[in-house]
Image (cartoon, rainbow, N blue to C red):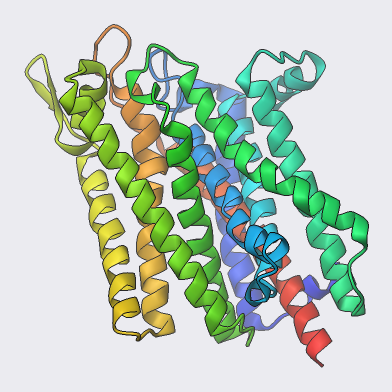
Length: 391
C-alpha cells in the first residue's frame, strides 16, 4: 500500500516540498545543537525544560485524542465513526513520532536515549513514559495497518487484532496520565503539584486531538473527495465541546484553589501567565498576550459551536473555524503556558523568564513539519484505499 503515497497531483507534491523545506531547516538547526551543545537553547539551570518538552506535552494529548474515535466505534459499535477511526490511529502514530523526536532534541545527544533501555529505572516516571509511548505507537501501527489492509481486501479484520485495539484504549489514557505525573514529581514547582493535572491533560487531549481530525476531514472532503459523513462530524464536534468545557472548568478550579487558599506558589504562576508578575520592581509578562488569546479563542470556538447547535445550522467552513480556534487555544494553554508558567518562578522564589532561541524554534518547526508530512502520507494511503474499495 505504500506505493499509493508515491502518486499524487502537483498540489500534493508541492505540499510535501513545502514541508520538506521546514524539515531541512530543522535538520540544520538540530545539527548545530548537536555540534555546539544545549547552550544554543534558551534553557539553563533554572529552566531545565523549554519549548521541546512543552510541545511534547501537547502532542501526547493529540495522540491520546484518537481515543474519542476508537472508544465509540469499537466499544459502543457507533458505526458513524467507521471512516474516521483509521484517521485517528494514523494521527496518533504521527503525534507519537513527533513526541519522540522532541524528547531526542531535549536530551541533546541521541545516544542518551539508550540509557532508558540499557539502564531502566522502574521507579522513574520517565521510564514508564517511554514504555507507554512506545507501546501506544506499536499498537497503533499494528491496528491501523492490519485493519486498513483488511479493508482493502474487503474482508473482516482478523479477530486477534481487536485484542490490540482494546489494549490501546487504556494505553491512550496512560500516555497522558504518566506525562502528567512527570510534572507532579517536581515538588519545587508548585504550579504543577495538583491532583487535577492528569484529568486536565485528558480533557484538553480529548478536545485537541478530535479538533485536528475534524479539520483534516474537512480538508480531505474538499481536496480528495473523502467524506466521513455529517453525522460523524457533528458527533465529534459535540465531544470537542464537552471536553473543551471540562478543560476550561479545570482551569477555573486552579484559579479558585490558588486565590481562595492564597497559596503564593499557585498564585504566582497564574499571575505570571494572565496578569504579569511583579518582582524586584520589574513586571514579567511575556506570556500574558498568549494566555488571553487562548481564553478568547477557546470561548470563541465554544460559542460558535453552541450557536450552530442551537440554531441547528452549520457549514464546513464554520465548523473548521471553531475547531481551529479550540485547537490553537489548547496549544497556547498546554503547549506554551503550562510548562513555561510552571518554570517561571524557581524554588528560590526568583522569576526566570524563558525565551526560546531561533535554533530551538527551527528544530520545533522541523519536527512539526515531519509530523505533518507523515500524517499526509498516511492519510493519502488511507484515502486511496477507501476510494479503491468504493470503486
